[in-house]
Length: 391
Ligand code: RAT
Ligand code: ZN
Figure 1 (cartoon, helix red, strand yellow):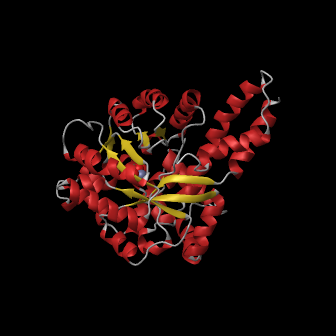
Figure 2 (cartoon, helix red, strand yellow):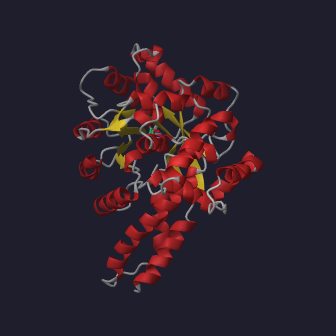
């Protein structure tokens, strides 16, 4: 088979496959100003805030945080887009969004871009973003400890079926949390929220030194409350492991770091809780191979996403190839982690290109042996890994 023809066919199918985006921070309209969108939000994305201080080291952290959002956005635009070329992945992402929306960036006029967002009605814009990114639904990270979210859930919450919930329970690990004082309190809390928001899964982010056997609050809550609830409700537990929170607190949300974790913990959990499905993503590049091997050994481990600092094309290409070679089509290669609605456009546009290249190469090797690969085969495979079939 002709390689170019195959590449075009795979690319077209990938572009046309609606995506189930299994980990995002995007809220439906019902959540009011928790839903971030538009150019100023894109520019003040925390990935770009970290980059701003690299280009402008004389800028004081607190001075930046005391500025109104518009001023912050202007600073980022000026440093990362006007005075320098936006070639980092997060900066390039903004340019991809602007281009996909059909806006003109040739004169780098931020106010002109702002006018577009000021004029478009939000609900129309949400439709447009879902259509441009060809995402069928997103799973939102819902925090039951967030007072603003609680108000919305109490009112009956979200009715937009493009937004599903994930119950994020990091707050349960906080030493000051009222719900982690004993098993009964923790269990009652989880059940109440599971019934209230009907999440697709429960999720927690965990530090690199997380150890399920250390008897600490995290281990206790997971073993005594979260896993029994996961079993009872037949609901996956997603573990996002490897984040070192606030290594530079002055950077606030942008100040987290990464460390290599111990994959043995995941193997132990999967072994001890065979009837619970563990969705696992790890933040350290160095953990990826061990994670693939561990997942091969346990049918209840579902590896997902190139998380956060891994969400760079060179690393995604490497990890996605590695996963396909060791796990075939039994993993979810990516989630967007979008915090700003518009980011769905670039995160998926950039990823689609990479997965198309990786899959084309694999199909090409197969067709060279005479193995038939039909359009229906490709559609089935792509839908399996991008369409939410594995949840
Ligand atoms: O990627 C990010 O935006 C991070 O800040 C986090 O949201 C991370 O993905 C998380 O869910 O903790
Ligand atoms: Zn996230």
